[in-house]
Amino acid sequence: MDEKLTAVIDEDVAAIAACDLPWEALAGCTVVVTGAAGFIGGYLVRTLAALHRLGRISRAVEIVAMVRDAERARARFGDLVGTPHFRLVEWDLCTLSVPELGPIHYVLHAASQASPRYYGQDPVGTLLPNTIGTAALLEALRRSPDARGLLFVSSSEVYGAVSSTGSLDETQYGIVDPATLRACYAEGKRMGET
Image (tube, rainbow, N blue to C red; front, side):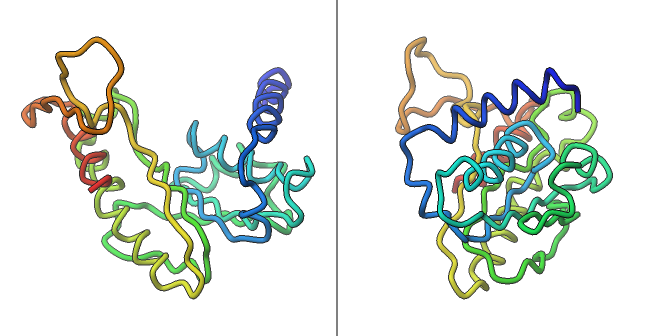
Protein backbone atom coordinates (compact mmCIF):
# COMPACT_ATOMS: atom_id res chain seq x y z
CA MET A 1 0.00 0.00 0.00
CA ASP A 2 1.18 3.54 -0.76
CA GLU A 3 2.96 5.21 2.20
CA LYS A 4 0.81 8.35 2.04
CA LEU A 5 -2.38 6.31 1.99
CA THR A 6 -1.12 4.15 4.86
CA ALA A 7 -0.40 7.28 6.90
CA VAL A 8 -3.91 8.63 6.26
CA ILE A 9 -5.53 5.32 7.19
CA ASP A 10 -3.40 5.04 10.35
CA GLU A 11 -4.40 8.56 11.35
CA ASP A 12 -8.08 7.80 10.68
CA VAL A 13 -7.93 4.55 12.66
CA ALA A 14 -6.29 6.31 15.61
CA ALA A 15 -9.06 8.92 15.56
CA ILE A 16 -11.75 6.23 15.41
CA ALA A 17 -10.17 4.24 18.25
CA ALA A 18 -9.93 7.42 20.34
CA CYS A 19 -13.73 7.76 20.32
CA ASP A 20 -15.38 7.17 23.68
CA LEU A 21 -17.06 3.86 22.85
CA PRO A 22 -17.37 0.62 24.84
CA TRP A 23 -14.42 -0.94 23.01
CA GLU A 24 -13.59 -3.27 25.91
CA ALA A 25 -16.73 -5.29 25.07
CA LEU A 26 -14.76 -6.55 22.04
CA ALA A 27 -11.68 -7.63 24.02
CA GLY A 28 -10.82 -11.23 23.17
CA CYS A 29 -13.92 -11.62 20.99
CA THR A 30 -14.00 -13.20 17.56
CA VAL A 31 -15.44 -10.75 15.06
CA VAL A 32 -16.27 -11.59 11.45
CA VAL A 33 -15.98 -8.64 9.06
CA THR A 34 -17.59 -9.25 5.69
CA GLY A 35 -16.55 -7.17 2.73
CA ALA A 36 -13.24 -6.81 4.55
CA ALA A 37 -11.38 -5.82 1.39
CA GLY A 38 -13.82 -3.00 0.67
CA PHE A 39 -13.72 0.58 1.90
CA ILE A 40 -15.88 0.32 5.04
CA GLY A 41 -14.94 -3.29 5.76
CA GLY A 42 -11.25 -2.44 5.45
CA TYR A 43 -11.59 0.36 7.99
CA LEU A 44 -13.47 -1.97 10.34
CA VAL A 45 -10.64 -4.53 10.10
CA ARG A 46 -7.93 -1.90 10.60
CA THR A 47 -9.74 -0.41 13.60
CA LEU A 48 -10.32 -3.79 15.26
CA ALA A 49 -6.68 -4.74 14.66
CA ALA A 50 -5.45 -1.50 16.25
CA LEU A 51 -7.59 -1.44 19.40
CA HIS A 52 -5.27 -3.57 21.53
CA ARG A 53 -2.09 -1.99 20.19
CA LEU A 54 -3.50 1.45 20.99
CA GLY A 55 -4.40 0.42 24.54
CA ARG A 56 -8.16 0.68 24.04
CA ILE A 57 -8.84 -2.97 24.97
CA SER A 58 -7.14 -5.47 27.29
CA ARG A 59 -6.98 -8.38 24.80
CA ALA A 60 -6.74 -8.38 21.02
CA VAL A 61 -9.79 -8.97 18.85
CA GLU A 62 -9.73 -12.18 16.84
CA ILE A 63 -10.56 -10.94 13.33
CA VAL A 64 -12.08 -13.15 10.64
CA ALA A 65 -11.87 -11.12 7.43
CA MET A 66 -14.36 -12.51 4.92
CA VAL A 67 -13.64 -11.60 1.29
CA ARG A 68 -14.51 -12.77 -2.22
CA ASP A 69 -10.96 -12.40 -3.52
CA ALA A 70 -8.28 -13.67 -1.12
CA GLU A 71 -5.39 -12.60 -3.36
CA ARG A 72 -6.60 -9.00 -3.43
CA ALA A 73 -7.17 -9.09 0.33
CA ARG A 74 -3.66 -10.45 0.99
CA ALA A 75 -2.26 -7.48 -0.90
CA ARG A 76 -4.42 -5.07 1.12
CA PHE A 77 -3.71 -6.69 4.48
CA GLY A 78 -0.16 -7.90 3.92
CA ASP A 79 0.88 -6.56 7.33
CA LEU A 80 -1.87 -8.56 9.08
CA VAL A 81 -1.71 -11.84 7.13
CA GLY A 82 0.10 -14.43 9.22
CA THR A 83 -0.36 -12.58 12.50
CA PRO A 84 -1.98 -14.50 15.37
CA HIS A 85 -5.25 -12.53 15.56
CA PHE A 86 -6.13 -12.31 11.86
CA ARG A 87 -7.72 -14.98 9.68
CA LEU A 88 -8.67 -14.53 6.05
CA VAL A 89 -11.72 -16.46 4.77
CA GLU A 90 -12.58 -16.49 1.08
CA TRP A 91 -16.36 -16.74 0.71
CA ASP A 92 -18.94 -15.39 -1.70
CA LEU A 93 -22.09 -14.29 0.11
CA CYS A 94 -24.04 -14.94 -3.10
CA THR A 95 -23.63 -18.64 -2.26
CA LEU A 96 -26.74 -20.45 -1.09
CA SER A 97 -25.09 -21.96 1.98
CA VAL A 98 -23.93 -21.04 5.46
CA PRO A 99 -20.20 -20.46 5.93
CA GLU A 100 -18.51 -22.62 8.56
CA LEU A 101 -16.95 -19.97 10.80
CA GLY A 102 -16.71 -21.80 14.10
CA PRO A 103 -17.37 -19.99 17.38
CA ILE A 104 -17.91 -16.28 16.71
CA HIS A 105 -19.22 -13.43 18.84
CA TYR A 106 -20.05 -10.68 16.36
CA VAL A 107 -20.55 -10.19 12.64
CA LEU A 108 -19.97 -6.80 11.02
CA HIS A 109 -21.68 -7.25 7.65
CA ALA A 110 -20.28 -4.75 5.15
CA ALA A 111 -20.21 -6.97 2.05
CA SER A 112 -22.04 -5.47 -0.90
CA GLN A 113 -21.39 -4.11 -4.33
CA ALA A 114 -21.93 -0.46 -3.50
CA SER A 115 -20.98 1.17 -6.78
CA PRO A 116 -23.57 1.95 -9.45
CA ARG A 117 -21.09 0.79 -12.09
CA TYR A 118 -21.72 -2.80 -10.90
CA TYR A 119 -25.50 -2.61 -10.70
CA GLY A 120 -26.01 -2.97 -14.45
CA GLN A 121 -23.29 -5.57 -14.85
CA ASP A 122 -24.43 -7.78 -12.00
CA PRO A 123 -27.75 -6.78 -10.40
CA VAL A 124 -28.29 -10.23 -8.85
CA GLY A 125 -24.75 -10.19 -7.41
CA THR A 126 -25.59 -6.79 -5.92
CA LEU A 127 -28.82 -8.03 -4.36
CA LEU A 128 -27.75 -11.41 -2.95
CA PRO A 129 -25.09 -10.50 -0.34
CA ASN A 130 -27.61 -8.19 1.34
CA THR A 131 -30.38 -10.78 1.35
CA ILE A 132 -29.33 -14.44 1.34
CA GLY A 133 -25.85 -13.44 2.54
CA THR A 134 -27.39 -11.74 5.57
CA ALA A 135 -29.56 -14.80 6.25
CA ALA A 136 -26.51 -17.08 6.01
CA LEU A 137 -24.52 -14.89 8.41
CA LEU A 138 -27.39 -14.81 10.89
CA GLU A 139 -27.51 -18.60 10.76
CA ALA A 140 -23.72 -18.89 11.26
CA LEU A 141 -24.04 -16.59 14.25
CA ARG A 142 -27.03 -18.56 15.61
CA ARG A 143 -24.92 -21.74 15.51
CA SER A 144 -22.20 -20.13 17.59
CA PRO A 145 -22.26 -20.91 21.34
CA ASP A 146 -21.70 -17.30 22.49
CA ALA A 147 -23.25 -15.17 19.73
CA ARG A 148 -23.62 -11.52 20.72
CA GLY A 149 -24.75 -9.59 17.65
CA LEU A 150 -24.69 -8.60 14.01
CA LEU A 151 -24.21 -5.11 12.61
CA PHE A 152 -25.66 -4.70 9.12
CA VAL A 153 -24.04 -1.87 7.17
CA SER A 154 -26.93 -0.35 5.26
CA SER A 155 -27.30 2.71 3.05
CA SER A 156 -29.33 5.87 2.68
CA GLU A 157 -30.52 4.28 -0.58
CA VAL A 158 -33.15 2.42 1.48
CA TYR A 159 -35.08 5.70 1.74
CA GLY A 160 -35.48 5.93 -2.01
CA ALA A 161 -36.83 9.13 -3.51
CA VAL A 162 -38.06 11.40 -0.73
CA SER A 163 -39.74 14.78 -0.90
CA SER A 164 -37.84 16.23 2.06
CA THR A 165 -34.58 18.12 1.65
CA GLY A 166 -33.82 18.00 5.39
CA SER A 167 -32.65 15.18 7.60
CA LEU A 168 -34.42 11.85 7.45
CA ASP A 169 -35.38 9.69 10.38
CA GLU A 170 -36.14 5.98 10.61
CA THR A 171 -39.87 6.49 9.98
CA GLN A 172 -39.53 8.27 6.62
CA TYR A 173 -39.53 6.07 3.57
CA GLY A 174 -39.51 7.22 0.02
CA ILE A 175 -40.23 5.32 -3.14
CA VAL A 176 -37.81 2.90 -4.76
CA ASP A 177 -38.81 2.18 -8.34
CA PRO A 178 -38.17 -1.57 -8.76
CA ALA A 179 -37.80 -1.13 -12.53
CA THR A 180 -34.66 1.02 -12.23
CA LEU A 181 -31.15 -0.33 -12.32
CA ARG A 182 -30.31 1.10 -8.87
CA ALA A 183 -33.20 -0.78 -7.26
CA CYS A 184 -31.13 -3.96 -6.83
CA TYR A 185 -28.91 -2.16 -4.30
CA ALA A 186 -31.65 -0.24 -2.46
CA GLU A 187 -34.05 -3.17 -2.29
CA GLY A 188 -31.26 -5.52 -1.23
CA LYS A 189 -30.36 -3.21 1.64
CA ARG A 190 -34.04 -2.86 2.59
CA MET A 191 -34.42 -6.63 2.66
CA GLY A 192 -31.23 -7.02 4.69
CA GLU A 193 -32.57 -4.56 7.25
CA THR A 194 -35.84 -6.49 7.42
